[in-house]
Length: 537
Image (tube, rainbow, N blue to C red; front, side, top):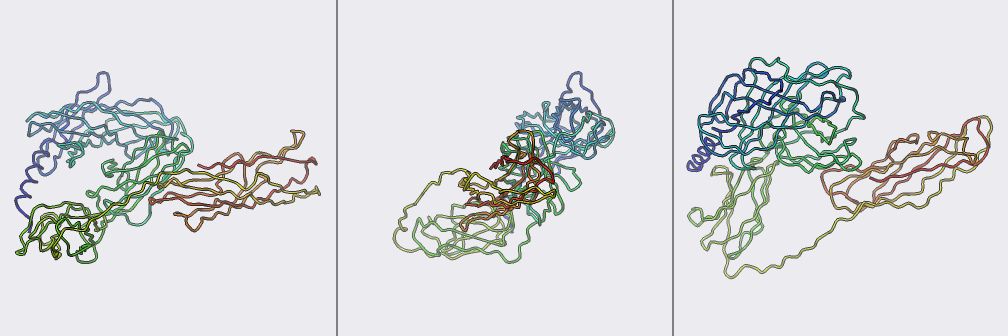
């Protein structure tokens, strides 16, 4: 049964926070177009529902943008129908969801930065105007216009920076068809970015590896999780991320799904990298525990000061748990050590034995004694064993390549009025990745035309095709993939690549290829030369 004193303390804290979360009141920007829909604001934890009109102004930084391009929206809200029930300082992150119609459909979300606000009892909470970036769809129709209408406003509120989040949602009930902003679609913003996400079922609280390409080089990264229909996009559905875009526009890193608030179903991961956006679908399903709770001690005996390592499985995922000492009568001994169970129901933690009356350890979820495991521990005489901690620092290395030679000789071909083929082997390239991270890489090639000595006659670069063959050494931490067979030219073709997996990558890899030159049926006789350039990024 749960401990009632703790439950009451949590309830009291929630009531104080909920009373002020998401209570939005903002002054409209002078000279900006404003709509005034009727909204219903629902405060969390049963703190009340308020309905009434609210002014909404959205100003865009551009009047026209290419398909897939990025906009900055500045949002100014009027007085909210909701009022604070307490006077205190809060920390609020506001956002607004806009529906698109015309040259594009779906929803976009503008999210501001966290604000420190002094709330006054029985008055609306004043939230300052805020700005955020978003991208229009790459499928937007060039030459058309996108009109934006208000769907809802969400204010995520905490009592302390980084604390538990309590959202208040204000949904438009009437007047939602009024256009609050619009933008012209100029045309394509270039080659669209590509995002890759893991397949299969993912679980709340799980870090997931994301990859991608063709983002804005070195662009700032924002990640959101949307419902399967594209609505409800929110950065708060991820709790942390290590995403970054390098100088080649390649996205790598992980993003950790929020441990709560993600019902089973299909979702869309939306990543903005600089001026480009890409999406990928994922499936989220709660992790299912298949057996009784288990906990194991690294040692079941020892003296005072013994550090016991505890591992467990089949616990409720993403919940808080704790471990404490028990005496011979089963009473708990201070102190209690708190830890979190992982997304897959497993945990690893440690506890230092410090009571002379200890007879066992109690591992428990929250304050629920019926969700616990008791483990016997025998206190022995004498001091605990002495330990010496060994440490070493492995500094990151580099990503380099070397090649066995520089010449590609297709030999001599006698013109006979027919297209002929000549073959050559690529000088082996060796890639060495000692960066010690979880990064990927790609090795690409471009080819110039083969030019005769007179500088005029040429054999097109596309007459040379390659068939890549790549291999990883036995000690490498990740596999390597062959590039696609095909012709070469000014556009980079992949010889070999290694994708980030979320785990540590690195190793030694070889890159080989068979090159085939197809000669023209008729051409000027003579020697032709060209350059194959290999680039590692």
